[in-house]
Length: 231
Image (cartoon, rainbow, N blue to C red; front, top):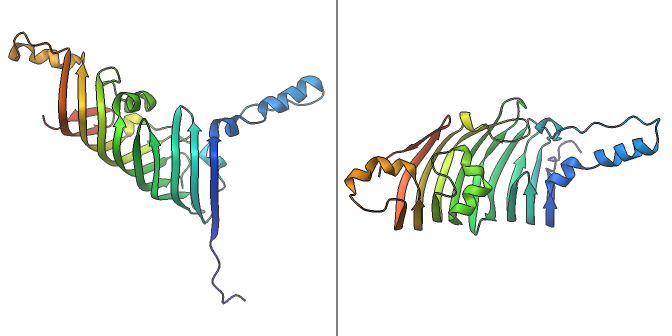
């Protein structure tokens, strides 16, 4: 009956442990092993992952994953809804995960309609992330101004912006634009070279190690330029 409304596709994915790296690298070794035992076989060359390989379709996905790994990222309790379209759009709704001792919640859109110009526009809510662990896991967010060895504490933040990505979904940090409203609790700033410029104002105070109860500021990352709006 063509008058009936078409039912939307749905996929519910549940897993205690999901390693995407293993899936992406699956089999090439197997096929090449077959080639070594069968000289007449043609070895299969390993092909890197590309967003072009994703079979986009109109579908609603629900996830509940105990532990997830992709590249160097390791996440726990990955839950939420994702709406996929056949045009290459992923809409994240009430999506979240735990990492580095804290929680991250996300809404946003991944636009892969042009696989050579993938754009991610997220809005993050972050609660109680252990900061030095976070900077290590996310490779200092692509900046070199404040590194994991310089700053510790618990991070609470709201982050939004635009993140261009390569076709393998790795971020292009020199074209990324983010606004970060950040509060750090029970923190410590260690060996932060930029403070040396203010040494004359603090006399004999030791600026190599500064502890603080609460630090709040707004930061921006624009085209690889990290800016602190005020102190």
